[in-house]
Length: 312
Length: 276
View: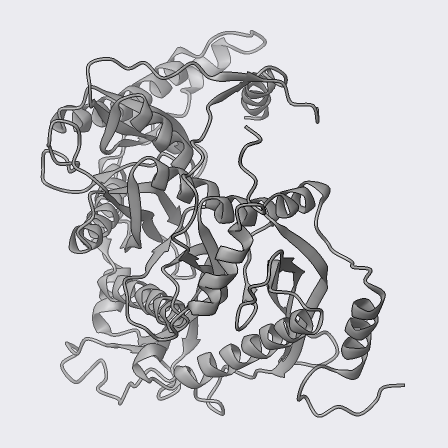
């Protein structure tokens, strides 16, 4: 039996689980023992496993959606053929911006639900949050955006205005806090660029000599730069001092041009995931890193190298 | 060691206060960094501030090589392509860092990725974190190298920290490459070796020639930077898409210069880990 739910607030089952967890005071967490100890050592304690999920329908390729339009207007191979294609970049308001927006909305919905669970449990933030995007098996073009992590609560009376989120594991979080930094937000910067393959591209591709494919280089460079800009912008939005990158991904593929399906476009999609961090100045003198020489497991390195050599 | 108790000193409360005081949308300097938390903190401790993620990329079409396949030889067109494309990627990354006013780039990863662009075309990409030093290098000199460019280093944050502590500074990444065709064995020598386990001198020699060429080129780059030496050299063989007898030998390392005369680091503490 599923109760009706209008996508505002938490789904009833989630709300019930969270309320139950809060009332009983028993928490669950996916932290390893080491992570658990690390978090405790800097004055935080886990309050429960939290999750946010959203299933979105995201149709994308082809003329109907028009997201991957390259702006080509039929200047053609024959008409001089010298025209150099520009990159239609989502960050500059190309049609793909709408697609980036949808994906962003979906991620925000998932993150929002996770932080709602965290708040309901009385947590101050979420560590080890893992953001995934997976195809929803039951229906075509549907994607599940899911984020799962462990909510933690700081000792003391001060509560943040909104819970922080972070991809860092327990140890990473503890090290960061010890050194005087606190995570702020889990961020995703994304950009899509589309570029029409012009005459010059075709000529370079079949050249006999070494040749930089300058049009495609521009495409990839601009898309990456745009994704970085989006990440900066989001990081600055909540007032962090910096962003630590968790993951980056770049995909490139070819599609028939929407304006002229005898010609082709190249499409690039770049995603950067990271956590914004902020410095809190009142940290005690940074504990100096100690150099150590492990007495056990010393042969590991040698054994690894030998095994590597044997595999070749 | 146990004198530091974060909870007692109010660290979690401080952290939460900072979050509560965050100024949304306040313009300020924000950096992005490709470093892991450990690396990030160690780089800070070494006296450097990360100021931004920098990258350079080149999508490159490799030309057609003509050659005599019965002979051990370097395939110059291919060698040049691998060199030129990597150089383009590195230079672009350095240019980005220079605009940020960086003193150097740490944790550089240089890779070749075959994307969906078609055959003979690959992306050469260099990614790293630009850093700026809190104070000038010992002796009041600049951290940049003798070409006035930010230093580059493929060392991890951990290795970088150790290097600085030991009184060395990175100058630049140096690389050497050689794409080599190893001749197929001649019919005569195949027959004369049937049923014998012997060294095939021509193969051995081919591998030597190719590796020596790659390493000599890397060394020449380091000499140009007036380096004292090269650390962390990796000598790899890549078989991009050229078939069994054509291989790229690629040597890469970080050229270093001394910061001071003695290179003592304090004696490491011995630890015995109890978790196996």
